[in-house]
Amino acid sequence: MNAPVRQRFEDMEPAQQAGILCNDPRFQKFAAMRCGAPGGQFSASASAEYLRQCCGIDSRRELSSDRAAQHQFRILRTEFDAWTGKIASQR
Image (cartoon, rainbow, N blue to C red; front, top):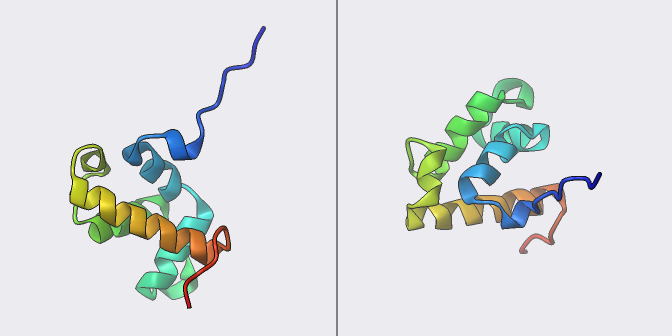
């Protein structure tokens, strides 16, 4: 049997990417640090709330149709990628 083909993260819809990010412990730490949370760690639901606030939306589902929210999400992802060292950060 052939193994199912995994979809690349970059090829997923923004709402799906957001769901995955909010469950990533690194993103949870990133969100907590950005908010100055004591203990430096957020839950998945607190990370989702942070993401919704950053993108100006009530539901991650809105990332599928709200172009301004998509733009904010791309900025947030870039900041997160720089924070993790996945990409170089601006000076």
